[in-house]
Image (cartoon, rainbow, N blue to C red):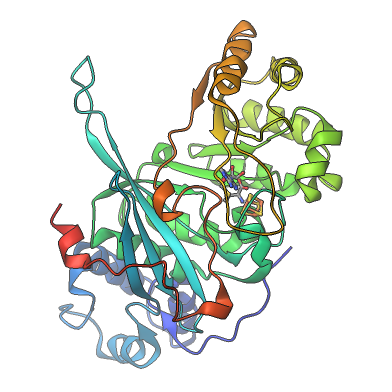
Length: 376
Ligand SMILES: C[S@@+](CC[C@H](N)C(=O)[O-])C[C@H]1O[C@@H](n2cnc3c(N)ncnc32)[C@H](O)[C@@H]1O
Ligand code: SF4
């Protein structure tokens, strides 16, 4: 399932594959590629390679003629009461995407071992073709997929505001449907010579694109996998996730077992709670049975409501969430209830939607000065 072709005229310097191709065509040694990225990462705030010293003239000329530091720009930022910040980003072809910075502050924990960390939630597609019935992004359809450079640019924009230590691929789109670009971006982000993010601080969330799960395990065995499961049986799952018709639950669970054999990682099971659809005792017990041989933590996610005439689910009741959690405990399955971040700015999971017909008129985005945000 590849992307819809987008017509792009500019190249991002963060599209390493393009730099590599151009250098190899012009017989420029590959050490100059590593040198370029080491420089860019160390001087990321300069937003330019113009001051790079001792660099071959021919290579510099190629970079200047063919690449931009960023091909996307931040149109606006919106800050929620809990500090969560949503950035509206315009890509070079006028498409808009959103990225979200979330803060987790555990400095006051009992052991005194906590810290304040910032997690970036990145988008990897403009919209999504999977059309999950509860998700705002799914209502957009797929408008296109992001390049490797556009994925990294989200990180670069976020660095203007916070020190990002963790990345989750939980924004717009299905990362395993844009895998080549996600993979290339992840390589740059985790490479110890470049951005050097820890593999264990990266989480890729998938709705269950079965054929690519093992590829991800081979490529990034130390990164985390989150599976958006949302239902404990095939019937219910395909009612709320249309693509589950093709990616059947029994095959999906077998693939998850293979993933664990290969990586030895525990996985995150994301379970969205929809009132009276999948949040009753029956589903909790069925889920307990289904997961008994899987090393996992279940993230119970109360459904975030969405403004869309085609979506009429209800958020779960507090007591049903607690009951669900207790039942999982009976099966020895650890679970957490997801703190919803940025709900008041529609920056929470699955609320990311950009109405392309309202581009440039998005009244919901109140521009917050990025400079002010960076001083926090
Ligand atoms: C937006 S998706 C992106 C990653 C990937 N496509 C996936 O489905 O896992 C990230 C997570 O948000 C969840 N989600 C979608 N719509 C939601 C909503 N309205 N409220 C809460 N979570 C939602 C998804 O089920 C998924 O677990
Ligand atoms: S939940 Fe994930 S896979 Fe489903 S429509 Fe939303 S972004 Fe796409």
